[in-house]
Image 1 (spheres, rainbow, N blue to C red):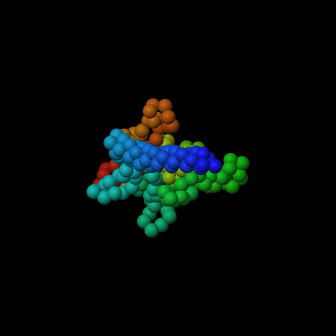
Image 2: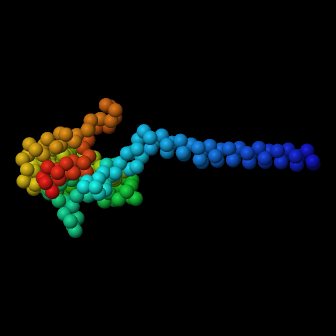
Image 3: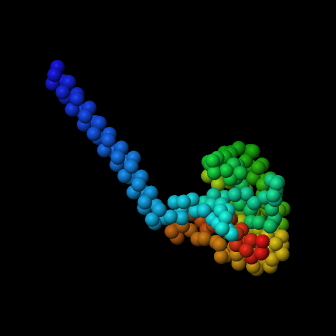
Length: 203
């Protein structure tokens, strides 16, 4: 009986020591090391990639946002528009809200959105790319395809009294290639593009 109690005590003490060691290693040392590396090597990304304009924070390069006419839900023709978002680009409501591919509602919504995007930008429906009518998996993707940016050039240039060539150059300058040269697709960050547009238009 005494041996059994002693063995149980030793096992309990060993388990407690292991718990304390793992708590220190995984709960304190590891997070501190990861945080230190992130702050040292990836300071901007580790701090939400905040974008500033005129000394003020205007958003994050990692989170999309709406560009509507102030006080309305209508897209502002002066700005490049992002892809649709079922959450309204709320970072607290991430996740896909897409309907299934076999759902007839999806076909109708995509068709209606394609017509609206085509009319808004003055282009044929056949030129509207898929990211202009479908949301991203996260619902907060800050990027659009170069193709979607390109069909907006004429409308943006006219609304800002700029030459189309000037706006096209902005799109070209803000088009990023595939990540690491092979991951994903070329893309354009809408916030950074619109900030450059604002500077060009003298807003």
